[in-house]
Image (tube, rainbow over all chains, first blue to last red; front, side, top):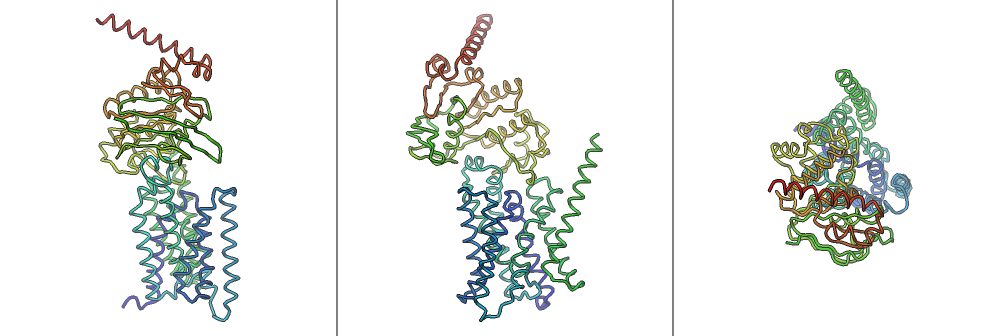
Length: 271
Length: 242
C-alpha cells in the first residue's frame, strides 16, 4: 500500500490542507481577515489543552474552541474596539491561556512543539482520513456558496439586494476556517496555519484576472509549497512545518517580483 | 400593481432616529425620486428597502417574488480582489456571454468586458453598475445618486436610458438624486424627505409646495423655471409638427 510510506502520507496531508486553504485563504485576503485566521488558529492550543483535560478527541476540542473564538470575534466586532485591536487581544490571549492550560495537565506528557509547529511526518492513516474529509467539507461549502460569498465580499448592500444574507455567508467562512484550523493543526501547527491561508493567495494575486483563477492558482502554489517543503525538509534535516512556510514565502517573493516586472513591461509597451 | 409598500417605518442608527414614520408605495412602471438635504435619510431609506438595515418599527411589504436591482452610490473594490467587468456582471448569477455583451453595449460600455473593474473611470464604473442591475430584469430598480462621476452628456444619456428601461422592463424605478432640474423632468413622482416625508406628489406640485421651497430655497426656482421652459419648448415643437 502506498499509504504505508510516511512520506506519501505526509505529502497527501499537505496537499489536502493546501487545497482547502486556497479558496478560504483568498477570502481571508479579500476581506482583510488575516488576524481573524490567526485568532482562530491560536485558540486551537486552548482546544488541545481542554480536550486533554476532558479526555475528548483533540479534533473535537480544537473545532469547538476555534468556532467559539471565531464567533466571539464576529459578535464583538463593531462594539467600540477596532477589529485589529480586538483580534490582537483575542489571538494572543487565547494562545497564552492555552499554554497555561497545557502546563496544568503535566500528568499527561504532550509534545507542545508538535502542536505549535505541526508534525506532518507523523500523520497516520486515520489523520489522513480526517484531513481529507475536512478538506472535502470545506471545498464543498466553498463551491456551493461561491457566488454568494463573492457577492457578499464585494459589497454587502449588493448582496442584500440580491436576496443574499451577508451574515450567513460570514458564518460559513467562520465555520470553514475552524475546520481548516482543526485539520491543518497536524500539518503546520497553530503558529503557521494563517501563513498557509494567506501566503499562497497573496502569491496568486499578480497572475489573476478573476477570483476563480486566484483561488485555483493559490491551490497550485499551496500544494507546491507543501510538497516541495516536505522534500526540502527531508534533505536539509530542518523542521517540516517552518520549511513549508519558508518555501511559500520564497514563492511569494518571486511572484511579487514577477508582478512588478509585468506592470513595468506593460507600461513600456503601452508607451 | 404595487411593488413595494412601506408603512410606519422608523429606522434608528446608533440610537439616533434617522427615519421617522415613513409611508411610501411604489407601483409598477412609475419613476419615483427622493430628494432631500444631506443627512436627511435618503440612503438609509434605500438600505431599509433592500433589507440591509432592520427597521426599528413598521413594515416593508415587497410583492411576492420581487426582483430588485440596486445601484449603490459608491462601490469600493478591495485591490486584492481581481475582477473583470464580465465576471462582475455575472454576480451573483451567471449570464450568457452574449447577454452580457449586449448589456454593456446598451450601457455605452462596449468592449470593456475584459478590463479590470479597478481600471475603470468613475463614469464607466457607474454605467457598469447599472448594466449589472439590469441583467437581472428587475421589477424594481433602485438607484442611489447613480449619476455621480458622469459628465453632463452622460447624465442626460443616463436618464434617457432609464426612460427606455422603464418602458422595456415595465419596472418601477426608485432613485435618490441631487440633480433637481433633471429630477423635475425625469420623474412621475417626487418625494421630499427630511427624516420624515415632508411633501410628495407630481414634480410641479412638490416644486410649488412651501415645505419644498423652504428646504431648497431658490435652487428650486431655477430648476422649476428650467422645467417649464423645457415644457414650453416641447409644446412648440408639437404645434409645429401638427
